[in-house]
Amino acid sequence: MSDSPASATPYEVLGITPAASVDEMRRAYRRRLRETHPDTGGSPARFHAVQAAWEVLGDPSSRSAYDRGSSATSARSGSARPAGSSWTARASAPSSASSLKARSYGHPGGQARERFLTLIREWAGRGADLADPYDAALVRSAPREIRWLLGKALAEEQTARALSDLGMGFTVWNDVATPTGNKLDHIVLGPAGLFAVMSEDWGESVRLHRGELSGDAIDDGEQPVRDLVRSARKLGRSLGVRFDGQVIVVPDGALTDASAESIERGRNAGTVAIERSRLSDVMRSGVSNGDARRGDVFEVRTRLQQGVQLV
Image (cartoon, rainbow, N blue to C red; front, side, top):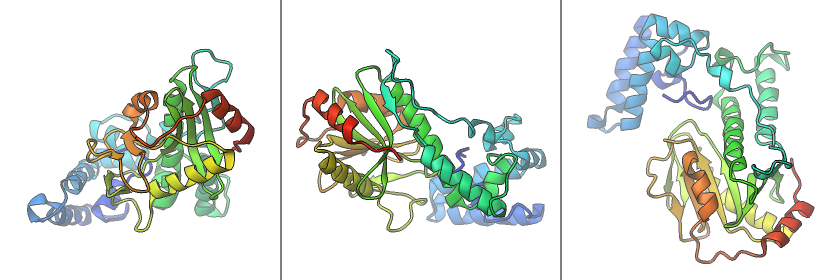
């Protein structure tokens, strides 16, 4: 079970509230096992999630540790590491003066964190001054759309750290405004071209299907690939540059079929969905797209530096 704030909690997996009794929890566990068992038409991933949830909640000591704020992984193993301990640190843009890092601008995850902090305070009590808005027990009790914002911020910050390690041949802009009203999480310019990068963590597995991402945590009608491509093209036209590809980055293990990560046909061609450990390779080699054309890097960088607006 993922410890991402965007993931379903063990209570949500079993379909019960944190106030459920042991008997209620046991009945819910057995019911969910029957519903998700692969032999009865269920999903192997869901079946595994139900078992992992029971490992956390079925033992009184691990349930108590989880309720006090330990991560699901730590609760199962008996460790006391708080889940929220890794949620508080912000990733600042790396120094542009560094000769070893990529030149980077903006504040990755900044907008998502600001929205999370505003909404968690409003939800907890009309803008209350919370002692710790990242307290694990508090975050887990919040609606999933609020938890997703924190997961989104963390995903952007982790991607930004990986991009900064690409080296001085790359330039990165984070949290970039676009004419569509949406933002691009990252723009990356390097020897392989210019790329629009989206960082996401839906807390569940996703897959590419017919040129779009799908998954249980992606709402009906939500089209992440289309929105990314549309925003990149409109921004490119407004700045007089052309993107050589689009990249959607998800946590390692989140793609159910990593072999089918590239979109080669249709209006979303030139887009890939990859796990984070593949990011550096893709940024260095580029996205496979026969129609891509790359202009002079120095000219493109100048236009971006003059026209990019950060949110």
